[in-house]
Length: 68
Image (cartoon, rainbow, N blue to C red; front, side, top):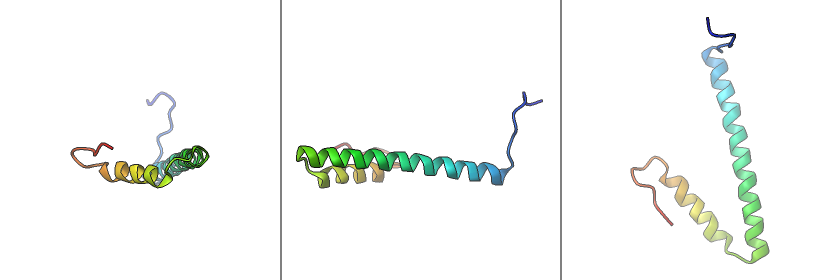
């Protein structure tokens, strides 16, 4: 017995995971947009901020993440 939990089939699980990832990406993009607006308000370099994000994303999966 599984304690009343419904265990989805593989396709349903994959679809649910896809929706969860999409939701996470939307939250990240919203956070980044807010940070970029703050950069603009404060007169900070948005290009530098975006570059740091790219560097971080590109380091995911590598043995040693690059530090900025």
